[in-house]
Amino acid sequence: SGLSTFMSGPGQTYSVSVFVNPIAQEMGWSMTLISGMYTAGSLTAATTMVFVGRLLDRYGARVMLPIIGGLFGLSMIWMSNVSQPLHLYIGFAAIRTLGQGSLTLIPSTLVALWFVRLRGRAMALNLLGGSASLAAFPILIHLLNSTAGWRSTWTILAFIVWGALIIPTILLVRRTPESVGLYPDGDPPPTTDSSQEELSPAFREVSWTLGEALRTRAFWLLMFAGSSQSLISTALVFHHVTLLGSQGLDAGVAAAVLSVLAPASLVGTFVAGYLTDRVTNRYLLAGVQGILVVSMLLTFLLNQTWVAFAYGITLGAAMGAFMT
Image (cartoon, rainbow, N blue to C red; front, side, top):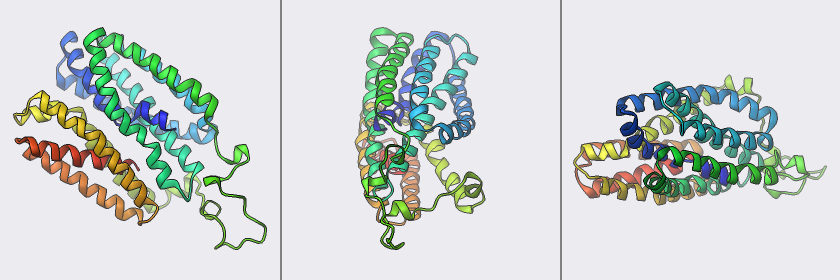
C-alpha cells in the first residue's frame, strides 16, 4: 500500500512540473497552454475517479492495483510520444486518474479496511510513501531529463512503475482481512457473550451504503473541505519555480525550498496520524486548513529567502497532515 502511494504521491505533481520547461522548449508551447492542459486533465480525472471508486468497491484492491499499475505505465509511454496539445491533455488526464488519483484512493481504502482502532497511525505510515515520492522523484526525473531527454524519461518511468507495482501487488495485496480469515487491527474474533462495550472498534464500526452516505450533510461538507488540498496545493507545487521567480528568488532558492517540503510533509503526516486516533477529526481538519491558509498568505511575502523556507515548511506540513 505504501509502495503504491510512493509511486503516485504528492511528488507526482512536482515531477510533472519538471517536464514542463523541456516540453515547452521542444514543442514551442506556452506555459499557459501546458498549464491549461494540466488543469483540464485534472478536472477530467476528478470526474473519472467516480468510476474508479465504483470498480474498487466491486472488485477490490487485489484486482484493481495490478490493473491500474499496468495502465499507469502505458499512460507514461503515451506521454513520451505527445506531439499535439490534445495528446498532452489525454496524457495528463490519464496520469492524474491512474497515478495521483487511483494510486492514492486504492491504498487509502485498503488501509481503512485493514485497520480501525489503529487506522490513524496505519494511514500515516502508508502516506510515508507520498513524502518519499516528494523527495525522490523530482530529483530522479531532473537527472534523467538531463541525460536521456524528457521523452526517454517517461519511458524509463513506465518500466519503474511496472516493476515496482504489478508483481508486488499480485503477490502481497489481499482485499480485506476477512478474506484471509483475519480481523482488522489483528484483533481476535469476538466471543458470543461479548457486550457492545467489550467489542473492538472494528466490530462496533457502522457501515454505510453509497446511497446512505450521499444523503448525509457530513459527506458533502467533507468533500467540499477536502477539495482544498487538490485545488490549492497542486497549483502551488506545479508553479513552484515560477512563483518564487516572480518574487525575485532564483531557481537555486526554489530548489532548496522544495527540499524542505518532503521532511515537513513527513512531520505533518506523523503528527496527524498520532492525533487522528486521539482528537476529534473535524478539529484537526480545521487546523490543517488553517495551516494551508498561512502558506497561501506567505506567497505574498516571498521576496526574502527565510520567508520562502517558512512557506515551504507550512505547505509541506499541511500537505502531509491533510492526506492523513
